[in-house]
Every structure is written in C-alpha cells, then in structure tokens.
Image (cartoon, rainbow, N blue to C red; front, side):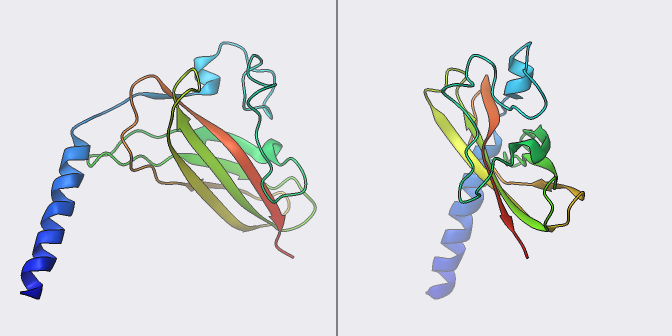
Length: 155
C-alpha cells in the first residue's frame, strides 16, 4: 500500500511539472524596460527611485552598488527560471550577500515571485555570479529587479 501512495505522489508531481512547462514568458529587467537609468549602482528607474528603492535587510549599509549585473533568466524545458546576479565585494571585509530578485507586473501592482540568491565568504575585491530559482509561471511583460541587497561581515 505504501508503494502505491509514493507512486501517486510522484505521478502528481510529474504532471504538475509538465503542466508548468507548457507556458513560456518574456521577462525584462528594469534597465531594459526604461531608456534611461541614472547610473550603474541604481537599479530602479528615475521615475520609481523615490517609491521603489533597494532595501538593505539586516545589512547596516547600502550594498546595492556591489551588484554588477542582473540576468532574469528564461524558463527551461520544465518552466523553471534561474535569475543570476554578479556581485563584487566593494567593502573592506570578507562578506556574505543575500540578494532578493523580484518578478512583478510593469506597473508594480502584482508580485509574481521572488528568489533569494546567496553568495557567501566573498573577499574584498572578489566577484562572483550566482543563480536563484523561480518556479512560478511569470506572465509576458513582467519585470525582474533587485529589491534587497543584504551584506553582512563574514569575519
């Protein structure tokens, strides 16, 4: 009896994965959705900078300037996306980073999903690119942006 239950759960999970793979979507970063970005360290557009800034989480200082690039990723065969960020530690100490990447509607009224990307033990001056995981279906026209960069000392 137990084998049948396990088989049933595996079968349902496989069906869900196949069903989610049927849809594709196009996601753009805010930089791509806007013609003008104020500078490399600011991830929000000029119009949204006052109402939609990058949070620091538990970190004591704004580390958004340590984010060099954001790639929203595209869905793979089963519909999973892998957003990635490239981070350079611009502090004077070895640091840990926790970066939140959010997917939302272009007008910001609907949040579809988010990924938390961790980079641990990055020495001063070192760079690293790391991926997150998005399993929900993201509709066409959605944007992807960094909403929080938490940098804490690893020393």
